[in-house]
Amino acid sequence: KAGVTQTPRYLIKTRGQQVTLSCSPISGHRSVSWYQQTPGQGLQFLFEYFSETQRNKGNFPGRFSGRQFSNSRSEMNVSTLELGDSALYLCASSLAGTEYGYTFGSGTRLTVV
Amino acid sequence: AQTVTQSQPEMSVQEAETVTLSCTYDTSENNYYLFWYKQPPSRQMILVIRQEAYKQQNATENRFSVNFQKAAKSFSLKISDSQLGDTAMYFCAFINSGAGSYQLTFGKGTKLSVIP
Image (tube, rainbow over all chains, first blue to last red; front, top):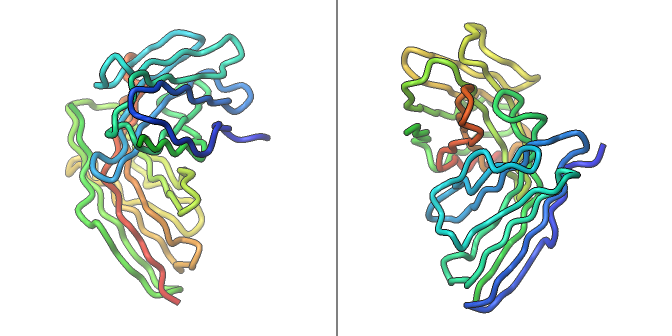
């Protein structure tokens, strides 16, 4: 059974640009969450989608957005990139969330220069 | 708001020995789930063990076990017979079971080094 797949693995962008990250969940998983991981702030929740609906959103500016498609694949977009957006972005999927725990991908390392 | 605290930023243990990682959390909820995740240098977060708050019995998974003290809001992880492959960051995480949650709250992590 394939795991959670995130693409690309690494990304370098310039300040002011925008970026789109992709996540393919485990087959059958309908919940997809996104987390930002930095050395200073640790792991912070961005948003969670279930059946194409955003059910919860973390405390991030509107530059961070996401969506989920009918096949449960998800994308997150960051517009007008800032240096502070440099981080590891992790995607996680679950059957329905909460009690099942989440299976994580290997993340996308975004560097903003 | 829920918080998760891991008071040990770094720990080390000799191969084959036992080590315990600490985690405390704060919540006003009664039903929730607790997890320990492992993140090796490969970056992928791997679920080590999960505990349902309404269950008294401590969860175990092979060499990994937890000591769950609900009243004290404590959730420590014990690793027995430590192996070199256990070297990683370990994160304690919490999630409410009620509708409207769907987000994990993580601690800052404990960096565990297993010494040969």
